[in-house]
Length: 125
Image 1 (cartoon, rainbow, N blue to C red):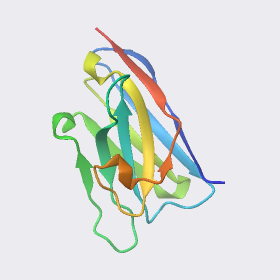
Image 2: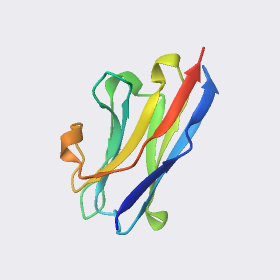
Image 3: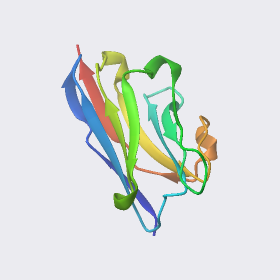
């Protein structure tokens, strides 16, 4: 059974940092693109960041334009885990953060066939 499990969410003050983790089990995702999305109640799931997998493709990372410079996606292939380092957090970053995986990463959540359960991030002002 394939599972993606996020961790690392919580409550942080504005200006602080958090690192989210997404551990995968049940299969190896080294060749898959991995991504982070976020969602607040009443709104659509929003793209945050994604990276490409291995499999011979040139590695790249993509970020939502509004988040460049504050968020960093990375992965530890040996641990089958992807991370999202978030810094200079703002109250508007408050959301449930989801990790996802797909053969090729895009900004469209419909592209992804594997999802975690989400982790809450709350940024207080």
